Image (tube, rainbow, N blue to C red; front, side, top):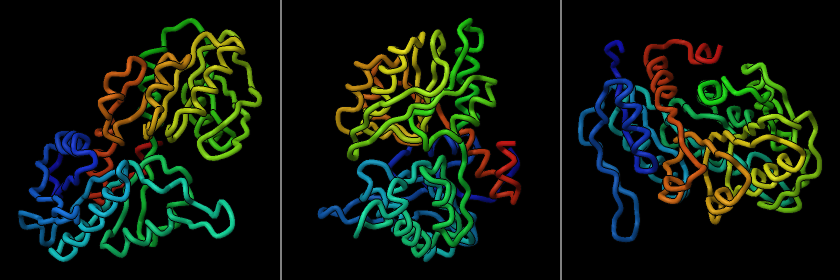
Length: 317
């Protein structure tokens, strides 16, 4: 790595990922004290000089989302008041992204509100990964880079299933994810299938139809977020009943709330692969069919390119 004039600061939501990015770039993490007062109020103190520096703050807004969001906002303000030259909010998992439009009368567009908060707090640019909806980039009035986990997934799939005899079919678990699934299928020169489902209410889905040839195929579902796990597990059951040899899933952000881990471990899924954009819980770490792959090299390379004013999009060419 070249000699980069930059600083990396880790908040508390996903310190292992920040440490891995730091190791990739061969840069130590900036000393900072991010803690709570007795009433859980957030306090931040930067413990080294960052005047005139290019600072990257790593913080996923995962559970508890509101606490981690406040940590990020207060840290951004501390950096701005410490005269950092440029502040980049590195948000591997951008919470509130699913609230990207009015879903009904008198409901918020919280993804836009959060974008406003991050900008007002002092961020000069944002780096994130696999936004739930690409148009969220337009919610920011500052430069925003949206990385893609597809190259990381592609590498893992080739290493694990490249020599298998069964044909591989990439499956989108809903119509909204077709673009993501098609892009990965094209990289792998694999088939494409789509699950047509009807969602009666939030967190509950019903598989209605499978579009595409999957009989005798190894099916790999791809998605951006797995939360309750209901959609993936229902889809896996439907695919197995339709003749799939096996069903695996590659999902960027493993939210896995509530009973999701138990649901996945008891499902027909051979494996659920997520990135480390969200720090794994103990339940995820011990689950027999859930594993994480690291996006630290991807983020490390993106940070390096931003610091050197090089192209980030060329990472995916």
